[in-house]
Amino acid sequence: MAAAGRAWRLAALLPPWRLRAPCRSLCGAARGAAGGGRLLLGAAFALGGGAGLCLAARQRLREHSAAEQPAGNLQLTLYQYKTCPFCSKVRAFLDYHGLPYEIVEVNPIMRKEIKFSSYRKVPILLADAGSPLQLNDSSVIISAIKTYLISKNSLEEIVSFYPPMKTVTEQGKEVLEYGNKYWLMLDEKETKRVYPVKEVRVEEMQWRKWADDWLVHLISPNVYRTPKEALASFDYIVREGKFGTVEGFFAKYVGAIAMFFISKRLKKRHHLRDDVREDLYEAVDKWVKAIGKNRLFMGGSQPNLADLAVYGVLRVMEGLEAFDDMMVHTKIQPWYQRMEEAIQRAAA
Image (cartoon, rainbow, N blue to C red):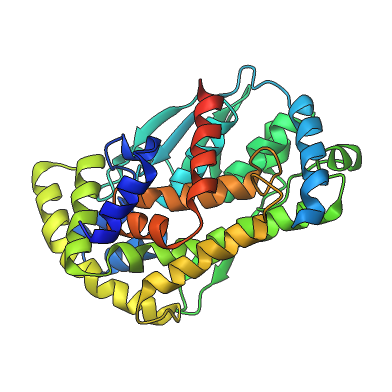
């Protein structure tokens, strides 16, 4: 481990995330490792990859918590790769809101666990609040379930507000996108109760989108930055994912080499610096600066959806050199530790 990593562990006095096995990293990439170049590239994308608002945010959270409905008979099943940042976002949201759910770990190569679905990505959430529904896309899942906890509308009606739309990427690939995915579908009264100041809502949506459009794309280039880091990442992937013996061996060794080279292509595609750590450091310090000195979280005294999204993306690097370096060279540690504690309290 690099000297920076050792310094982080000593300085932090072993906070909660260092006491657990370093899991949660990057399983989707292994699907590519065992499935060829096309899948490797797809996996790489999957892994990435104000003081003036403070009082309003605190008031919003007090009223918001009181307004949320209990989950009641809502039954949830999450289909995931444990180490995927988008799946991590959903787990952070569900855990923080105290929503019980079952997990089905998907084999990233065969994906037999989601053969029922024409949508072939994860996360997928099956939600049953009287009739079963399939929710796709991490941000849609979070927005729809959050709306359900606040609104009086049925989950089925809420999901209809997030229609899938076919779009074409710059590479000419047809993909599904979901409209309105950063919006909570609330009526005027509910909106004013949850977001008494318009800027609070705008800020939350802006940073949720930033986590999806920018932050997640910094993960792969950083965790596969060197051959050593790539091998360490795939070691975690194989240990925490759902692989057969041969699949795991192939993913670990062949995948690490392949993703090391693909990470260089990703660096070029996203216009990152030669030292991709600098982009990571700049991004997380930008996030901390946006929270400011007068708020514990972007949501004020409690995390909001932007906090949960950023935390969910970053925590897939836990146990890796990139995570240790980030903790040493940025100002993210106090916020990150508060997030850990907030989620642990909610789950208790």
